[in-house]
Amino acid sequence: MLITGILALAGCGGSDPSASGSAPASGTSAEMPSLPPPTPIEQFCTGTIPSAITQRQLPAPGGPSLNSAWLGSGKTVAVLLHQGDGNGLCGFLFYADFLAKRGIQVALLDLCNHGQSYCLNNPIADDPAAQG
Image 1: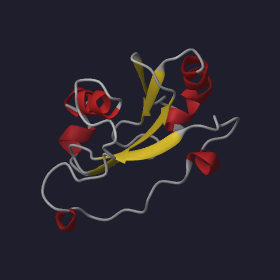
Image 2 (image 1 turned 60 degrees about the vertical axis):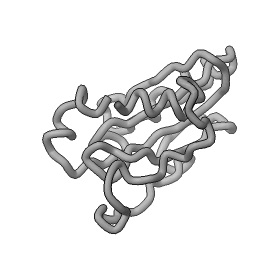
Image 3 (image 1 turned 180 degrees about the vertical axis):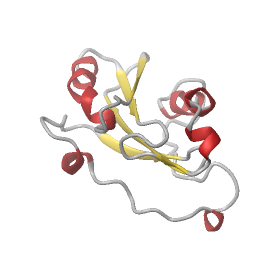
Image 4 (image 1 turned 90 degrees about the vertical axis):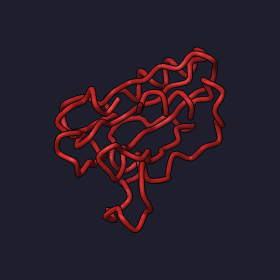
């Protein structure tokens, strides 16, 4: 489910690549609790941040959002999941930049309750396979 949405945002599968991914997964935004927006990558991550990186919030199956970052373009898409050290997707910024410079579109993703992604449905948050 989520990986399909990521690929649609990346322009694969015939979906609109300009979709922002900011709409709630189901229901209206009034039903979802509000959380502060994530800290910009430039402030959250340490080290060198690729200049062309774009941060997006994706609706999470357990609401309200998954933090993602996008870099590069091309028909091939690499999806890099968070690291387990609390820094989330930050640990893959160098590799994402490496791939993007070689014509690969990169989607970096923090799954539920990692990095700056939050899910309120604990069964979903505890089951990474259900998030994809």
